[in-house]
Amino acid sequence: MKLNKSVLLASAVTAAVMMVPNAAFAQTCKVTDPTGTPLNLRTSPNGKIIRKVKNFTPVHIMEYAYDNKGRPWAYISFRQNGNTYYGYVFREFVSCY
Image (cartoon, rainbow, N blue to C red; front, side, top):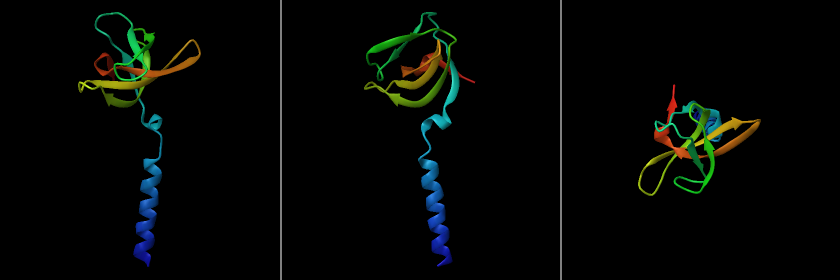
């Protein structure tokens, strides 16, 4: 019976940790597009452009995704003029430290 309680407790702790939102694990990074032009923020990997993000803007990577060609994208959030924006950017143009 004692073993069952230990297994149950371990399962509950594991489940609780798994339910923590990805935002809790967000990486702080910055936009580093080598072309010097603003980076496109998109609705999905390689999707519709919804905004531009200037070089050296601090961003938080929330999760990673891949487009239909297998290229890596990052789902990010960033603040600008008191607003928070979310979207996908090409992962190659974001540097994390």
